[in-house]
Image (cartoon, rainbow over all chains, first blue to last red; front, side, top):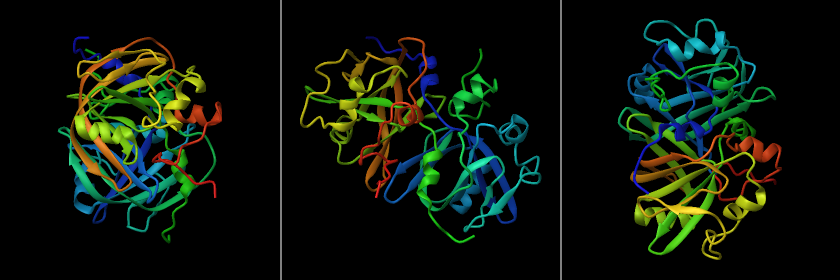
Length: 173
Length: 173
């Protein structure tokens, strides 16, 4: 076997789709990610991977906290699209959506969300283009019962694309 | 909002199901995980979370390499079950399955697999009960086209359970 990278192989990995929220002073932000993962059960710990260019990266680096909203499968693209393809540097993404403030002050988006998590970061690793932030869940709630939106459903049923900042981005070239 | 952990919230996170393979000298091992994640696109980097009690943890810690086989949805429980609920300390899990040797010497299981990845670890974080290993993909291949097995499908359709060593384990108590 000779070493060779077939990038299509990575497309077989499965993910959900989430809005990761953050806050710095009175500025709120949210972005779509597919990279939320529970890393231990006892205590419940969660990791997320964020592109260094994103405003979310700046906010989490400063405050060491983030929120997660698990999107329901029926969430429309018109709702979550702006969280993926617009920067919080240009628009206030939270101005038109339902959210509540978590115990750390982080906004937790409750609209089209099955559940929410709030995480305090205790460690991180520089991955090159991205950073992985790892933390303790300090708050979690189930808002409703339903099917979670998956990355596969987003691509196959909603015909969605991955933005260039995504860890799973594959150039169409 | 007062802080409270509802463990059911974590069940809304989405995952795939994979066999992670490892090798130490002439001993081969494989175990089921739901925690394989691509962390950057350029270069392609991959992370996996492994319980410290598992033989896989011992092997990856020693050799800094692991393999991933993405299971197809039609993979039967009788095929992958032993990789989840038996230890490589007690049985040779690779003795009855199809695999080939990767560029690092790691076995890559090709039976019931859509694709395979081979990863050289460059960093890791101690998460308490588990370790996250992060590395560069040095080899990846698509073996066939099909639907990947997801954690959701495993629970809902195959009525599978999570072993206590899983990061997503929830006691039935």
